[in-house]
Image 1 (cartoon, helix red, strand yellow):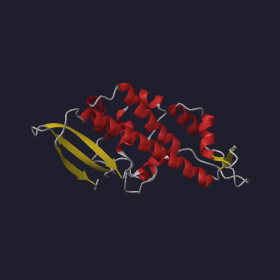
Image 2 (cartoon, one colour; image 1 turned 60 degrees about the vertical axis):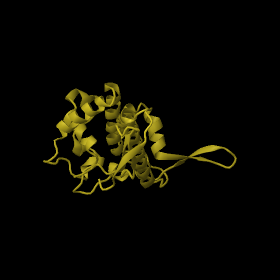
Image 3 (cartoon, helix red, strand yellow; image 1 turned 90 degrees about the horizontal axis):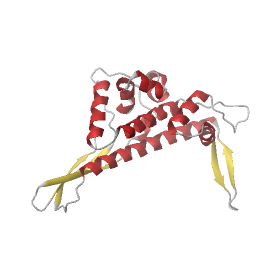
Image 4 (tube, rainbow, N blue to C red; image 1 turned 180 degrees about the horizontal axis):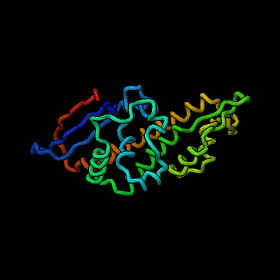
Length: 226
């Protein structure tokens, strides 16, 4: 049930006196595919489940969150693990974010983006007689995703059901996507957004750990096995 699927290289920095003066983390090989699909015996990333366990009923209502099993990006895998206390883990995570300088407003933004990804995964596409067209089959999921991402619903729907092409002459036009292509587009977007959020969080961690002092050497710790 280990869902921390990424590699990291932690550097612990020392100055000329051999005093520890700071650290930073370099990440790589984030398992983005886990965001949208897991095996039946695995979980998605823990942060998603912590929303349901740690948020108040009012906060979950604001994010239009129901139950974990209602979301396609979570329902295929394990929902609850007896050895994991998601409520306590959520409180610990919030405390850790406050410690490194992530404000309450920024934390609410993180929660909104994670919730948006769950709603995004529930957007389905209908196959029609027109093989090249695939209208969305879950307008409520589109509206919830767009609200949390602060986007017009129509713009999000258009982005998921078509791709923009540019001709050699410079003209721009839209090509409708088939249902399978639209599903791929949706999942690609979800993985890209999660990766961007992850990178932002790592930058916030490094900003709290790095030092302005001159460093002489560092001890590096490589963690590649998760």
